[in-house]
Image: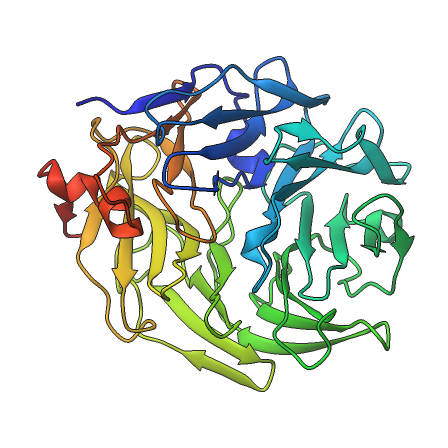
Length: 400
């Protein structure tokens, strides 16, 4: 049974352009994925049958390659939120700006036209994952936050807040390095002030730090704590870390490669309560070469899924896989291969932050195809039923 092609003509730099493509699953059958097509436009596609078929692409905004970045946030990824909106952020090279738009999944309509939150004189045009960064989140208190580095220039590093759902944005104090692009992703914090947020951050600055930043909304200030000061997973092609909020306690669960495509490469896992309580969990993977990328999702019941790319040879023959933990990262199950098709030059993998259904999508660099698995929906759906279809097909067990 072959994998499903979501789009056979994505832009050839998908793996450097999409920080968080989703997918966003609002049920076991209905999901959305966001990406840059070959036009190039920023678009989304929707499925109503668990990923077996996908609607025609809907344009969110026209963008101009070479430089862009895309990241989304869904209401329900915020602890306790029952909303239906997906918040879309992207960097547009044509306007040298950071942009925003909202899609309401209840009606499949955009709330308003796309807006430019900030415009600068320069966006880095290098097609490299490390050259630009943008991320959006919604706090438990309801504020939206947009953090981005359009380039390594100080003028292009900004942090904005909206208290009215994205209609208006105001500049807030930013935390940034001065000479490098900070690869970053923001999350709602589970702190006393419901409008405080967290940010996972790394910079390819020779120091190899992977940090947790905490934003105090009322004080408009940042603090920082080191998660790991010796991660060397940076490369031009893939995000080497990811995180997701565990709904049961609001903790931030993250996974990060300490090295890239190396026999000593470990995929590390951390459970973050706050900047003073960062707990290293059991490695998802220890000592595995030919491996890159990371994607994290957590079910409402607390099961952790960590997706990654691994196989025979990085750059030509690897596959999308995941491992699962049912005990908070203390132990990890056997690797499950998500794709039915043969190993190929996969260079991007993404997973729903709140694992609800068929979560993983991946991207083939050689063919420019954005893919997902063929799904057999069970009579009574659950995250495991849908995501473990690879096991049911008899292809799901592997060694890495």
